Amino acid sequence: QKEVEQNSGPLSVPEGAIASLNCTYSDRVSQSFFWYRQYSGKSPELIMSIYSNGDKEDGRFTAQLNKASQYVSLLIRDSQPSDSATYLCAVIRAGGTSYGKLTFGQGTILTVHP
Amino acid sequence: SAVISQKPSRDICQRGTSLTIQCQVDSQVTMMFWYRQQPGQSLTLIATANQGSEATYESGFVIDKFPISRPNLTFSTLTVSNMSPEDSSIYLCSVEDSLAPRGSTDTQYFGPGTRLTVL
Image (cartoon, rainbow over all chains, first blue to last red):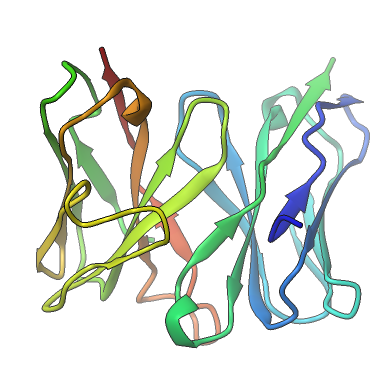
C-alpha cells in the first residue's frame, strides 16, 4: 500500500462545476496535510494546508480532513480553465525522523473544459 | 513566503559528469529540502539539509551520489555525481516557512526547479 494515494485521473469537469479531488494516507500518525498545484513545466505551488478534522475554506478552494478515515480532499468551486493542472496531495508524519518530510501522492490531473 | 531561486534552471549533461545545483533563499530558514521529480512522476524527497550538520538522506539516496552542502541559513547546493540517463529529472529545493503562523511552521515552499537531462 502506498503511503499517499490519489486517483491519477485525468479528471475532467466543465467550467463552473465543482471539482473534487481525493487523497488517502496509510499512516495514522500523520499530522499535516497539504494540497499543491503543479502546472506543466512548473514547480509545485501550495494551495491549502489543513491540520484539524473538518473543513477549511480559502476562496474557491475547500480542504476537508477526516483523520478517522485517513482521508483528505480538495474541492474547487466554480472551476476555471486556469485550474487545469496536476494536484498533489502531501502528508507529513508527526515528529521524530519524519520531521518536515513531505510524502506526496502521485497527483491527479485536472482538466477544466470551457 | 520566502522567495527561492535555483541555478541552473536547466542543463544537458554527459554521462559520467557531475552537476551542482544551487538553491538561494531571500531569508534565513532552518530547514531546506531537496526533492527529485522524475518524468511523469510525483516528488520524492532526497535529503534534508540543516545548517551546521550533515544532510539526512532518505532511503535509496546516498551521500556519494548526491552530496549536499548547507554553509549558511540562506543557501544550499545539491550535486548529482557520476550522472547516468536515469538521473534525468527535475530537482527541486524547498524551505519551511519560518514566518508562518504558529501551527503551520511545517509548510514548505518550492523553488522553480532545475531540469536535468543526461545524455
